[in-house]
Length: 480
Image (cartoon, rainbow, N blue to C red; front, side, top):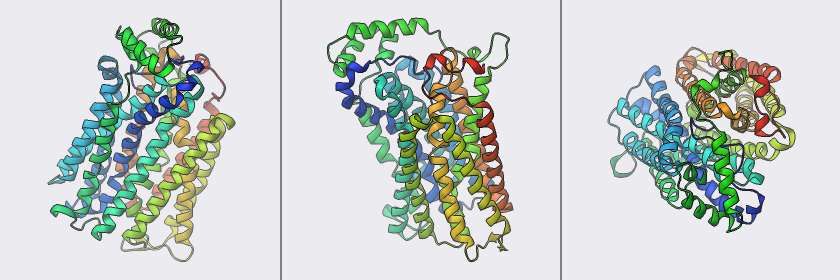
């Protein structure tokens, strides 16, 4: 994902002669991708704390759902503004701002005296999430050699799922050490509070490492700081062909008009078809309910008979599976193509979600909670993890790849901004609605997600075009 204004161009600032320096570029890309790590960490940290938050503040389902999802509202705003800020003050400045927002969020949420202060802390963290999720892939695209740009861009999704895993693992370790998420831990604070406070560590690391990487040469040229751009290019490429590279950057920027929302329209005044395709890809990615697994899985598994410790273990296992399947997608997306992976993933998600819907929908209900008897519990557990596999090898990383390459140059910034906002808002809708749906029927909740998974299959089959092997100049023009 890239933000409005801060968008990767069709030409890498490096050509393959810079491969001897690629190790340094990889390190720089990894540092930038730490924004994705914090994105995943901040999103999932609420999982281990949500049960304790509910008890501590006596939260009703609507308030609890809003507290869990509040970070997503901040993320939608952060994603929309990050690109413009990056074009004014630089890519590195946005990373540093995001790190500060993460740090503030950790302290405010961890020390919150009531639910609304906790929500404010989550919104602040969400602003950082949105900004980091935009600037990482944009910066990576601007500094990466063409030969390894695709793999480096995929670091964003890998960083997100790794952040989710580490967050869930930290939650588990703290809850285990304290004897429960709602038990007192260090310095008179509860275990759930330390789950939030622990986010300060990766926030400081991210901000500190951002001081060790160079500004994007493309931004420097855009600001007429050409001598500084030459210095950065010399460190990454060596002294050869610096002037040629600078001239290429200048020429590319001169050919690129300043992006605006008007770019989303065709000459006839209608919103271009490719814009709708990108927006719906983002919405379907969230409407299959993947984040329910990571935001609410502890409550879900406790509700069907597992104790808190077992629920934590199951959730951490699901996060590990998500990392492994993301690695599979990164290794295969350029071999098999984007569309086949999406279709396979949609089929897998439809089957597994439908299985969970049937199991929870037909389970006997005792005191408002479904009771999974006999083989039903293991089947539900297997189906949930197969759902994570189906998503992790397809819709998780592939949507990010497509959003970065499917739009024509004239509208890329605006279209990516719209798609990013749509993704965060869809994430918020699913997250905030789940507690209420769960109270009505888990079978209904998973039935809805299964329906969206089936619709995603039909949508990809009909409207999504394969982009494997195409140049960015060819993208999107046939679906305008």
